[in-house]
Image (tube, rainbow, N blue to C red; front, top):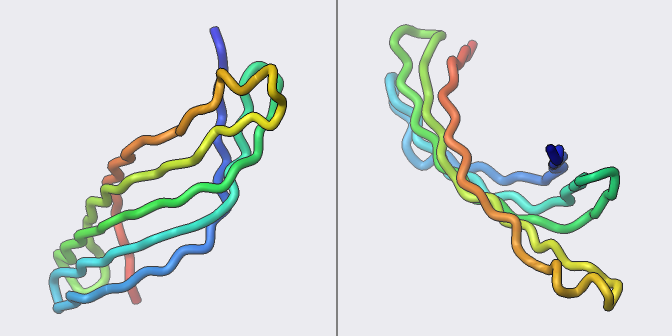
Length: 102
């Protein structure tokens, strides 16, 4: 078994074009550094992300939300003997959340 880990650190900009009393819809974009580890070897690369979120507030403070997006990071090896392992790490996370606002 091989353990792969990814630790992203990002600067994110979020825009909320629709915000009513019950619904919030937001769009986010991020750019950052990703620390990837596999078999004890660490690779650091840049990444970008795009996300959209919809939240429904069932009372004044509490809501439930669904977030979907896209995450992509190039996996570029700078040693010529590892250049065949170059690629792009990409995935689409989906998150269900419980939200509190005050």
